[in-house]
Structure formats: structure tokens, C-alpha cells
Length: 178
Image 1 (tube, rainbow, N blue to C red):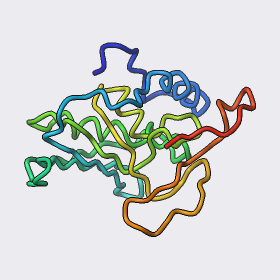
Image 2: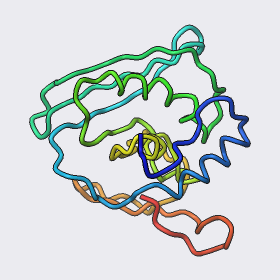
Image 3: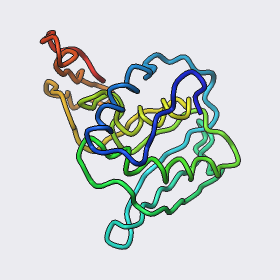
Image 4: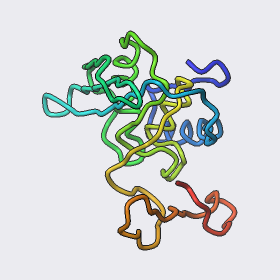
């Protein structure tokens, strides 16, 4: 766990409490590349079994840059938090944390299937995992949860910044979020 912050809670929270917890923990997200060399990369994904009553998290650990399989783990836990858009980390992270804890080698970087700071409260599952564990994390989401961007050029490697409102309270102009 990250010793520099109060790691927060994942269970026993109402949706309103979970949103407050996200806002509090988002202040601890590190957005600079301040980690050492990357020799291992983990990827995480979460699914559900038994009509959603079981949360299943998979973690795969690969060498970098070779991408050779080093380890993998699957964790299954009872689902304790309801499906609420924007609060998926409270539903999914308990199983992800269990799977990560069982890896024999600590990853240098984790790619999470989900949002990082491109989230209404700047604490998607990737950012939440990073704050709780101290691991460097990157969100790799399949869809956009917040913000907007210009037309993305078709050439490989091209990108457009994702922008969103300011901090939501001041009416600041749009700011980059990813």
C-alpha cells in the first residue's frame, strides 16, 4: 500500500460516500512519470460471473519489452458494490487487489482496463489502484466517460488532447485530462 496517503475504503460505502472518497483520493494521484525503469508490465481486466454476483479479476504479468509471459493470476470474490457508472472501481478493485497481491513479482507498471484521470472526479479504476497501492498505473478505457477531443488524425501515433471542464466548481476553462 502507498504509505504516503490514507488508502481509503472500498467497502461499506454508500454511492454518495464513494463519490466523496473519490474526490478526496484524487488529490493523491501522481501524473508525472516519476518511476524507475520498466522491466515488467501488468494488465488487469475484470468480469462478472453468476449473474454479477461474483467479481472475477485477471492480472497478467509480462516482461518488457519482450512481452514474454511471466505470471498470471485470477481472483474471484463476491460482488459487494452495485453497478453505478463512475463508481466501478469500488465494485472491481477488491478482486484486482487480491489478484495483484498473489503475483510472485511486483509489476513496474500496470495497464488497467478502465479510466484513469479521464473520469468526472479524476479517479477512475486505474488512478484509484495507483493511489491505493503506489504502483504506476495507466487507464486504457474502451470508451470515453468524460471530456471531448478534436478529430483524431488517422496516422499512427497521432493524438488529440482530451479536455474537460476546469475543476467543476470554479467554471475554469477546459483543461487537458489525458
